[in-house]
Length: 126
Image: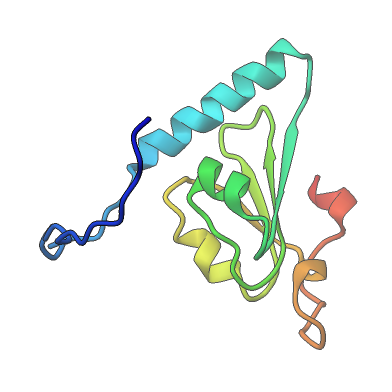
């Protein structure tokens, strides 16, 4: 039986990147399209994806938006553009996501002591 032994090795030099890696917007749209297809095959009207600082992978995978400061909700229904519900802190960042989404300010997701007078109820939004 072979025995493992510790060896000192040189780390490879990959150089310094010249540009920031980006996933193209059409990749996110394809993911949304696949999600809609799967939802339709199961007779779902919509799929709701929750995300927050600690649980952002699914939301980020589908939209490219990473909610760093507060909670967010992605609603993928039959409308061409998915809807993203965000609080005050994430409003601008959601607009910069690669996937085109209809933004809705839902201030219940905002941090404590922030204004909550500019959003509609969840029932009205959905």
